Amino acid sequence: MTCTLKIYRRNMTNLNQIKEEICDIGCRLYNRGFGAANDGNISCRIDEDRIVCTPTGICKGFMRPDDLCIVDMEANQLAGHRKMTSEIRQHITILKHRNDVRSVVHCHPPHATAFGMVREAIPQYLMPEAEIKLGEVPIVKYTIPGGQEFADVILPFLDKSDIVIQANHGTVSYGATVEQAYFLVETLDAYCKIVLLAHGLGQVRHFTKEEADALLEWKRANGYKDPRCDSADVAFRESWQESGVGRRVFSPPPFQSDNPSGK
Image 1 (cartoon, rainbow, N blue to C red):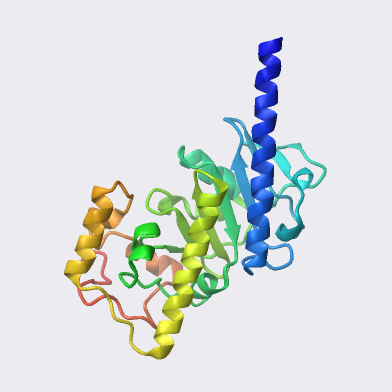
Image 2 (cartoon, rainbow, N blue to C red; image 1 turned 45 degrees about the horizontal axis):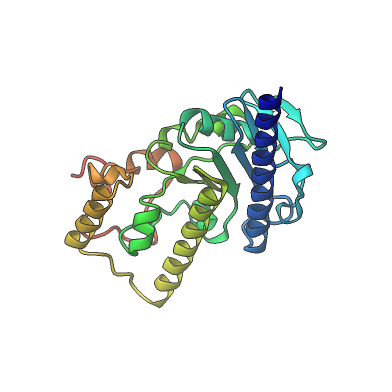
């Protein structure tokens, strides 16, 4: 009985810490303008069978721990006086597919979302921090939020990237912690903002092929996941036709082809 009580208390402490972290990240999202009014949703897996998530219809900047919901891996709400987010199925789909992921963050960062709205491919090989932390970021086709199709549309990209842009919607990022998933959003939006500012000044200048190859080799040597480490042209260009993505504003690096075959 004593042992069981200790385990229960430890689990409750962990749950309380996770709830506090979700509220903290929700406040950061709101304060940075990544989620206006009630926009966005956050989740974190507690154990094999349960997830803590934000409720629907609440401002992420003013949440309290007791506002959060607990759901199972089949989208059944187990606890919480508010109704769970309507987009929970997307979170569950990601968590089921990626064993290394415990948290999912969805929001509407303005600069990254703007790229998704015009379906302009995120430029590559311009900033080492973006290349190391993000790699190539896919833009997935638009689907109506909430259903299983909305969840499944990102499945082809989950093993190749830790953040995706949903066309005409926002971003979804995922990581081992709530903060890790959030930092991907912050990094992506900062990068998109810098790229847009640079474009306003003139033609952006890409890394040379040698500089790009050296950066990919550094990622490979340091254990970073990036499909371009195996094939510089693999990435996501094969999905562009379906999602309507292209390069209409930013030219590709001079050493890269927009044809998935590399020809």
